[in-house]
Length: 471
Image (cartoon, rainbow, N blue to C red):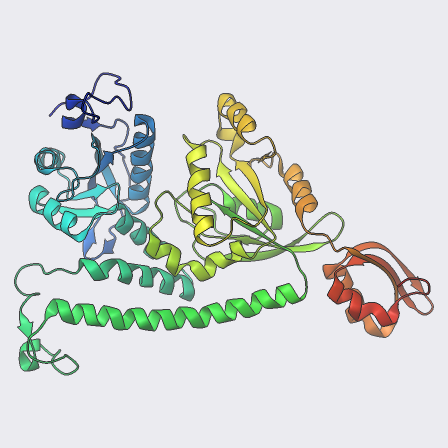
């Protein structure tokens, strides 16, 4: 096996339009991926034990730096799942091998690395087909996990609410269904009646295999989970409709995982949300109230973080949660300014926003963690996004500017009124303070005189109390 020591151009084609022979035949070791964790937590998904792992990536497009950054992110995902990363390799190919992902010869080289490192799992930086998983495992003789399975495992560990657990389980079931397989002959034997080991009643009868029974049970479970999530979506829609009826503007925090969205929410609203330096620490949306300096109320929602190549199953399962983003009045797109490739984070997030039809919502870029970013990176980002706000949720730098930007970009009521509200209608005064932009108040003998900007619905409710000379 050849280690890459030279600095070859990222995309140098040969005469045949492919890549240099040496590039295609070599496995490049990625330095700095091994980790030393004091507490390696055993986690299970599809009876997998993610403990001592070797990472494998296939570099098909882009630069070498981008390929290495993707593998570094995979290492962080593996650590979050409770794994000890031992080594990481990248192979240059036109496209992943349809049989073993990296090719039969490189699979044998990978087997040598697995044996030398004492690894018990290989994690591939991509979504593998059932056939690729099966054939690669046959060569390396240890469990093979793809990026999708790894992310699903992390989501399963972090889900806390009933809705979050149901969404993750649904995504897992959808991922598992085409990948069912038997270990040994026991799972492929035909069963029925007593031979089913207690499964006969409810089975389709003689001739049904264990895999077929598993497939039918998963389909049944998927249907049940879809029904549960639909019921939870209805409750969420009711709450959202209530906020909409009251014309309370909404702001959604969206962004890459571990960009600091929850920290910003805590800083802006004292929400007390869990803050953890880990990927996907927040899965369950948190909605808190805040107000602008002129007294206008708005809601601020923390949402699940995104990641490059977020599994389709997760986007579909979390669609009801992500609707908080699509139906907001303003998206605070939070980016980790200290990341090695913040531009790639922005691209990945916008791809997910497009999937949930949220690209039409006004967006405010917010670069967080400026205290950890280099001056050169900050200069580049300021040129990239001149209208962005640069903050540090840890130190509080830039938060006043962020609050001012939110205040400027929130929709404002457009109808100015003067109303004299009787003291018996304190509910209307409270509603004015909640949803309107108050320009002035005065307590008189006949009631509370309020000058404010309101929306059309509230203006109609207050029409009977309009002061003389004001429509």
